[in-house]
Length: 129
Image (cartoon, rainbow, N blue to C red; front, side, top):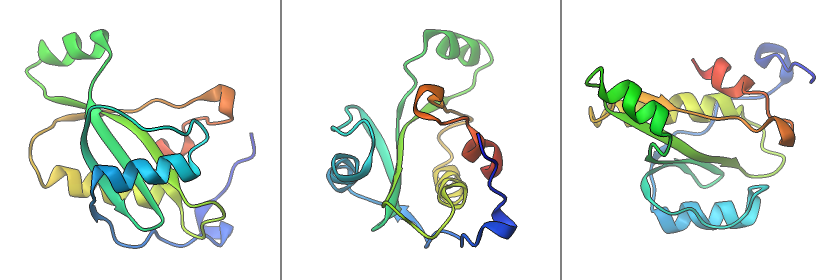
């Protein structure tokens, strides 16, 4: 997998994000996400006209138990999508979205997954902190 360095990539910061309607977010998934389709159980959708992140309840029993035992509230990133050929960094979209999610003061942990079979190595998650 080729590494892309933000500072030399020419990518810009994502436009400012906000909470968005889950139907609008699902429309973006239909149009742009490689898995397509709609998601169920959307708790929060955060993004802008060119991309979004969709959060829902954590579905992993392992993580549910692990964090419940520590009295931590956990949420899961269900999908992340950006308009094809976007000129901004997905890590910037994610970082801004997590900061906005933190303002709710409802969750302690965000669980994310990458899909190596689709060529996703989780670099966006690492880059966004």
